[in-house]
Amino acid sequence: MDYLLLTPDLFSNDGGISRMLRLYLKALCELSGKGDAVRLLSLNDQVLDSTDLRRYSSGGLVEWEVCSHNKVRFCEAALRMGVRSTRIVCGHIAQLPLAWASCKLSKRKSYYLVAHGIEVWRPFTFVERRALLGARLVLCVSDFTRRQLLENCPVPPERTVILPNALDPNLDPPSIVSAAAGPPVILAMSRLSAADSYKGIDHLIAAMPAVRAAIPDARLRIVGRGDALPDLQRLARRLNLGGAVEFAGYVDDSELHGELARSRMFALPSDKEGFGLVYLEAMANGRPCLGARSGGVPEVITADTGILVGYGNVPGIAAAIVTALRREWPVEPILERARTFSYLRFKERFASLLSS
Image (cartoon, rainbow, N blue to C red; front, side, top):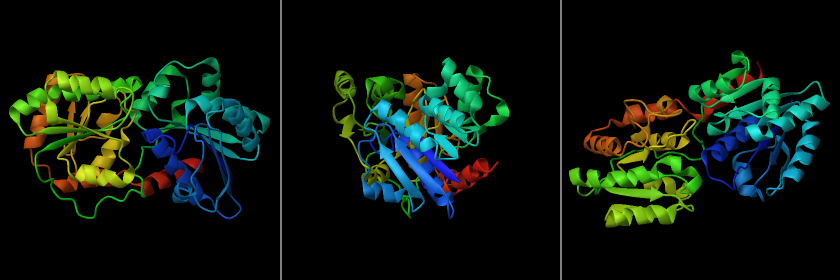
């Protein structure tokens, strides 16, 4: 079997979609047998570092190409590589028409779409709808995403399946999880861009005066970068929060466990998460999570692993943070929840879907 993985990017972006598509590449390489081939095509990556690529591939990867945001080059390469592949996995709806066109050139091909979240929570163009109707399976990261897709396109329901996101096995959680020492820290990690204002970072900052009134030494630590940072900093100053809100900037994977180890809880009251991979990463480190009762988040955070609040409800966010900080959270149920989304389970489920 010859596979082609089409991706927006793998390593030039550190968001949830890119992180998951790395696991799709890893799984395809591990599932390929003798005589099989895996090909990779990325639209936005400018270069693939050999060290990064080795972590998520194997000898089964026989060809790869990056297009540095060049859409014409990407389209040409997708068709060229597509005619040599029997199964195409699309990492984004925008690339699905290329898989459909490749299959038109060869009747023996089939293609799949990974549906992550907001990119499929909308009406589709005629070309997108036609490509969706031709897909062998649509792999939805959550039931919410699946329902949103079905509302916007008459895809036969039996050709839409739920394949949840998974934890990256390359990001080994600590072998021993211990309670954080010092003042209670609420950790938030997100892109801080104006386009991603739905992440609710401003709501967390707005909730901190009420949190501090109940727990005076509580601190909010925000990890991330983007063009919205100056506005968020101004909001913190306007609320006279001083050192109660810390902006840590970008943190790479090697520093992630340390940030979580120093925190008491993780919070991201986002409105439009198709799944919320970052919650799993926090749970794998034994930390309870606060999320919005929106999108696919309620399918990830349970009563034993965190608290859900209404999106944009600043008093509710503040009350939930205070409750979470004052509560004793048994670690084992949190870790067990994270283990249900292991890479091994993901790969086994993916393999069964590819062979169905």
